[in-house]
Image 1 (cartoon, one colour):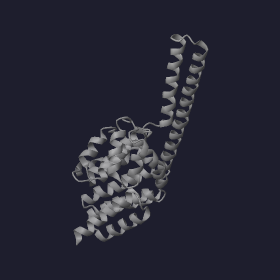
Image 2 (spheres, one colour; image 1 turned 180 degrees about the vertical axis):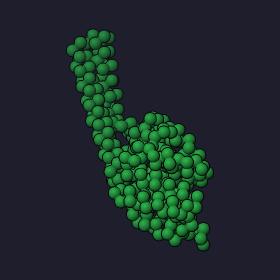
Image 3 (tube, one colour; image 1 turned 30 degrees about the vertical axis):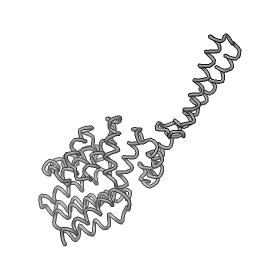
Image 4 (cartoon, one colour; image 1 turned 60 degrees about the horizontal axis):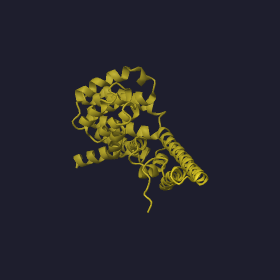
Length: 296
């Protein structure tokens, strides 16, 4: 029985063709130099070389198809088409689990789809090959923040400690995750708000604002919370539904910290409805369940 391939572009039949080609070339060399059969040797070697080239071309075609599929999956992630990304990546992840490019794309997708545990596992592996990839670093920190593992989020942030999205995810972790350093998280918010790369992006401005609301709630500054949330909501109007759902989760956290439990529950319910099957929905659902359990 042919074994399944484990490398992009590879296939059991290509392996068989290459082995046959090598065997034919070896036979040809034997005929030429031992049996002194020049013409048969040349023919056998020529057939072997043709098979070798045919196998190489087939490998390249399959590898290019793999790369195109990976590009489509990454484009779907960037466009917020998360279900399309999942469907596109599923066969790649099944066949090429040890390939760093697949681990990277699948990790980004699984986080966005609401599975930070799987995402952290995939991205830890991918980070060995993508140590300078800012998206990998930021999503790994965010995955640990979502898992309430503040220590791991801090460790992962060392991959790119000054990158803006890493800093935003780390501030979230410090302010909200179990074991987070609340004072450090609160101190990060003004720094993030003033960064030029935050000001240029509505998504980052909204994230910085809602983190500011969480920090203000921990100071019992109701006016500060309400002002920060108004700013975050205004920025969120232009964002995709999955981003609004995530911001809604953090808004719910801020309102919970302020003691406005009914408002928090309503906000979390809206976040759950905004983008089902996403990380924002998953976190809002968990937060709401925890609040209801604590109240009962």
